[in-house]
Amino acid sequence: AILVPLFFAVIGLKIDFLEHFDPLLLGFMLVVGIVGRYAGAWLGVTLSKQPRSIRVPVSIGHLPGGEMQIVIGILALEYEVITPPVFVAIVTSAVLTCIIIGPLMRWALNREKKGSIARFLPVSIPFIELDDNDSTNAISTLCVAAAHHEPSLDAETVWRAVLAREADKTTAIENGVAVPHARLDQLEKPVMIFGRSAAGIEWNSPDGRPAQFVFLVLTPEEGADLQLNIFRALCIGMSQESVRRALLRASPTDEITSLLQQAIVRAESR
Image (cartoon, rainbow, N blue to C red; front, side):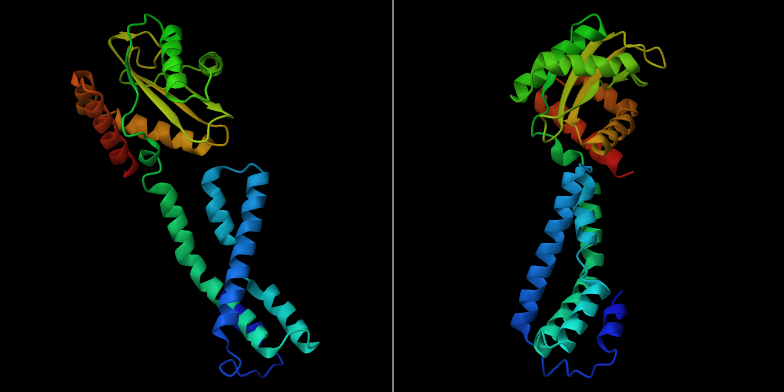
């Protein structure tokens, strides 16, 4: 990718890059080019309603000026539309953007992986002791708590959305864990409410065990990938018997939050 702009730059041209190099002009070209291409790509992926997690990587992928930038620069120089210093700045900025895209892309991808779930969790995860006898009432209790925690939510609307998903297929998994969930337009970040039932709630789970650990997970409408990552982390984290026993014994909310965050972080590292 670095050699392509250089190849186009030397075709039929004899330009002294050192003589015509202008650092201020190069800085201007870099700022205008990077900001313009990034903003254009960001606008495109946003308007096309792509998942939030890919918006930064896709936008970074459009940063390099590439050979087309050099071709236009060559034509402009031949017709004396631009001066040699401007052309040198164009070529140099194209080369530099090709060089920096690798580290930037790596940073963007690691940014989504590292702490992608734990960083969304509040300092204290809302926690409720569930004394409901069935899953429908338990979901209602959790939805009321979610609406109290996030003012933009309406408990009735959330309840119906979660029940609609529950009607398709049970959200219970093994080991006494259930993860009722929904994606909502009004949310900008995930909301998670944890409910615990010492007696257990019938949830039509695959292993036949009643649900003692119920996680209500609400994510933005465009957060399908984030929702799956949360499910994966919860499934892995709650598969450990030591974690489940500790959650059953824990009483202070801060202790429960710490246990859940540690379990999720360990699950994400796998």
